[in-house]
Length: 266
Image (cartoon, rainbow, N blue to C red; front, side, top):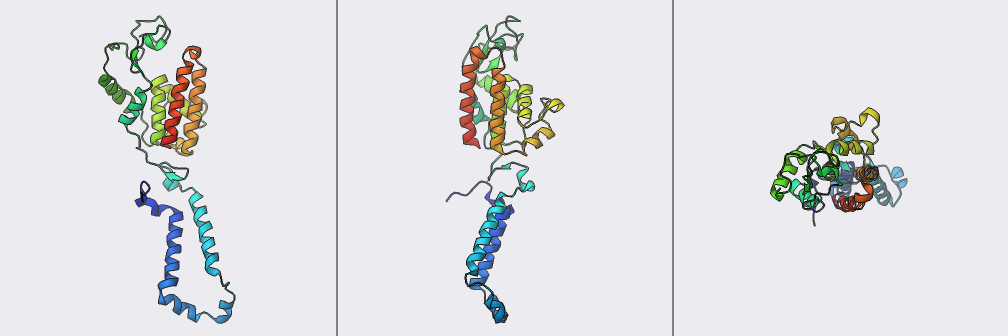
């Protein structure tokens, strides 16, 4: 039998507490002479009013109470992502695994002149056409030798400039991965803005900064709600770009693959 993650903390759940009290109560009935002594001093007229199947009734009540207790939100536990029905680890997806997923989308060298990211100026025919390799683009790294970039160098860049600087501490790792992958594709500021819109922020709240207010709001939501809504916002953003007709199919496949990852991570 395999135990759940963080099983040592299970006693904090109200449902577990009710179950433990119930087990103690029944053990007291079955094995304690003290209970029999108490039972014997109860007046017979009171005993006559107790249903013969009282144990079944108590068991039913306890069962219902356990279900209700399990459904009740406990802020002291849920604020660090005990989302939905399961306590899910925040750090289930590390950088190495995230990079392996990413590199499956970010292929080798490309110098497509119709892709603004391939130009050092960030716009078509602005600056030098240096291209993109492993997702490392000329518009973000204009001084880098993109064509001769190695996979090891790309991995180091992703770790230092993107993973470490995302600032997503305190968010569930499933959300971190999706946000990180999105940020690499469209920029950190834009990805965070789409996340903020996904959780209902409007106006000045959508500032592209992953601060305490944004994290707290994210953690109020069910994990799957955040993952699905962020994915929807991502697709809508892609569809709004003038390059959608040419690159939309590839972006859609990427998002579809990430939905599969989300199903594994939630």
